[in-house]
Length: 143
Image (cartoon, rainbow, N blue to C red; front, side, top):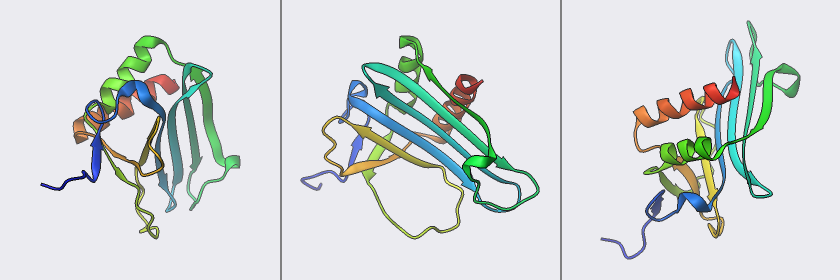
């Protein structure tokens, strides 16, 4: 067993109360290009949610700001923030890997927290089922 772990677990190594920023981004630059970003963050002691959807039907990407079809920011209730925290709880955060784009669509997920010192940010959900619930939760918030 290594002396130092190469990953952190949300809820065990990272308290959900210490999360300062979370990004979820998906992008398709092929035919019917699209871009989707969800962001949960703290601002002046408030929990916030930002979403942006960009679409370019019958065309190729990457999508630009001019292609935005839905965008918005809302302040979350304590209950909504607790739902977010429950969904990321158990997820794994490992050292960020910078690599050449492989042409995949993502999602690319990054979690930042108090005292992360810029080392561990690349996030993965505990399971695909949890990730699907997260996407449904974000879609409902964006409505």
